[in-house]
Image: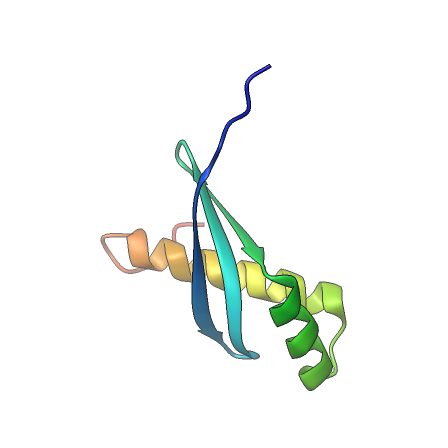
Length: 78
């Protein structure tokens, strides 16, 4: 069994909930977004929203932001 190490980067992004650290992982033609726990917990506390709700909101916002950045038209292709 061979382990695959994904190319990744950490970004600080501005969202409607506040700034968040997001880990981006790249594999083949896929992009995966993972909000960092500390950012999610902090924004959940400050917004009064639940952890899962904030996690999914950050993940969606980050992915759309990255797709817009990579798209030639500047619009996210979801």
